[in-house]
Length: 140
Image 1 (cartoon, helix red, strand yellow):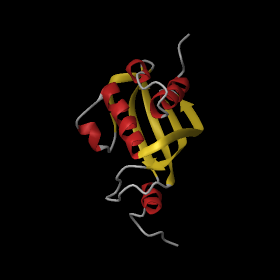
Image 2 (cartoon, one colour):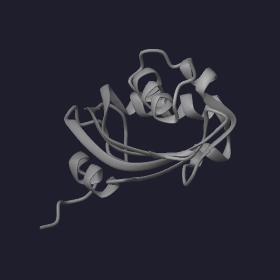
Image 3 (spheres, helix red, strand yellow):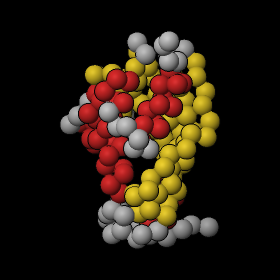
Image 4 (cartoon, one colour):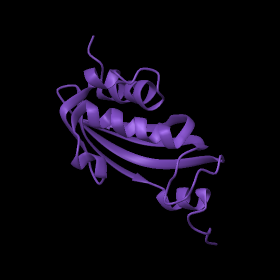
């Protein structure tokens, strides 16, 4: 049985982002995969890029967990709304680790080709994350 695009993205989040089996990316991420507006995408692509994104995020936030809140799938695209929770254990935005738990929310659009993830666009609450780690003072 072939997984739907929604099932593919759910497996990628469970296995790669939540750290259960990062090598799942080898099977489910297209060799030409790219993510928009990430520096790492200038150096890597494909499953290596996808795994490196997740790994570098886990280095910054121990006990990292991603929860998919909503999924909308149409044609070759799957949109997600997700929440990431983890302990700030790596330098971020020029701020040393705080040891505090932080939360990041985002909306993401993923495009698939031949049953594999090939492209991602993400809009996340970076301002909120900066406030949580002390890189910015909260605004009222």
